[in-house]
Length: 432
Image (cartoon, rainbow, N blue to C red; front, side, top):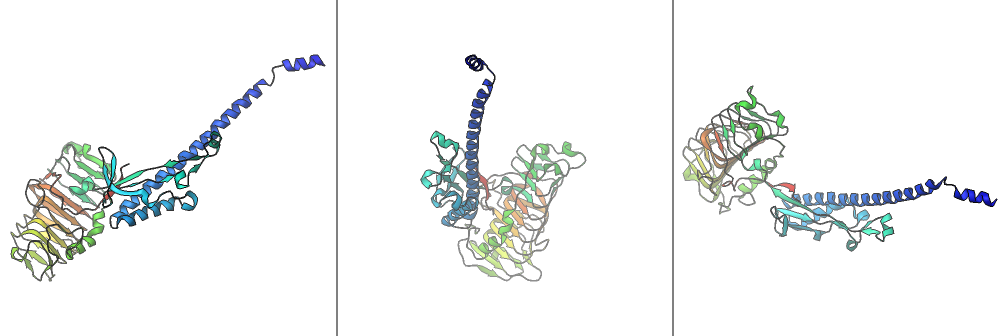
């Protein structure tokens, strides 16, 4: 019997089973810790998604509301995605700050009066009473973990909304045009380009799918630079949804869209068929009544430091100039704004600050001859059709809720300055 036990003890069968158990225990431990780590990473990602949503909501709401209301909106959105009953106070009012974002240094500077940027700092921490509970990490004496996140959203005006032609439908530009560095053509459907156009490096031609560009048979060969200029993208034309507000701010001479050169809230009320320089009082808003044949602006009239608001269709006579001026009509006709020839929008001042002008209409614009832009803007809900002076575009913005049709033999110059009075609304993007 003793020899039998000695023989059994000396046998090696089954030793690998014990070793396998050790390996299995190790694998299970590593797997368990990996599951815990994955759970913590998932909780961190959830916190970041909540931070991004809350920051976007805060800055969007801040556009038309005070800072306290916007901070409360951020907390509301955070609680919607991560209810306090389950996650505790993930985001508190004091975790939301408005301020300024420096792209170069990637730093945020708080400023309670700012509408430019917002930073939110949500967290699940012991100090908040809502740390993230781990499972197997508790065996390392770490049962709870502090997690935090940060999101910075900023406002910006898209490049194409500052200078260029932007249409919700087709943007159709003919032949023999030159587009300088910085100029933009954008359509929310597609851009149509004819032959012999030149696109400098830095020009942008965009649409939802850049492959939808409409070209002549010669394709890119007769449009040098076009291929490099193509981009894919889509813009919500937010400014078109603000036309009622722009009208009211101008009509009542009060509000964020009122130009600084309007110095009196008392309007000049006119009931005329023809508007002349003598009718215009600098620094005032002019409300013009509407007659059956619409409103004509006398040839050679210079509109300077004035706002004209009307419900009439407007026809500009030859050689009319707008400098530091806004003309707004609620007429919805296809030619609610038209001109004989040589309509100049903005002061010809080599892109200097000031002197810009804007035409805004609920209808369409038709300028068949010699339209000139010098830091000017047209905003129309309907179609914009124009023929420009060959050298008369230097700082131009056209935004249409329909199509834009331009003629040939134009040079589209880019300013980058001198258009500070153009109407715009902010867009929002994640900076950090």
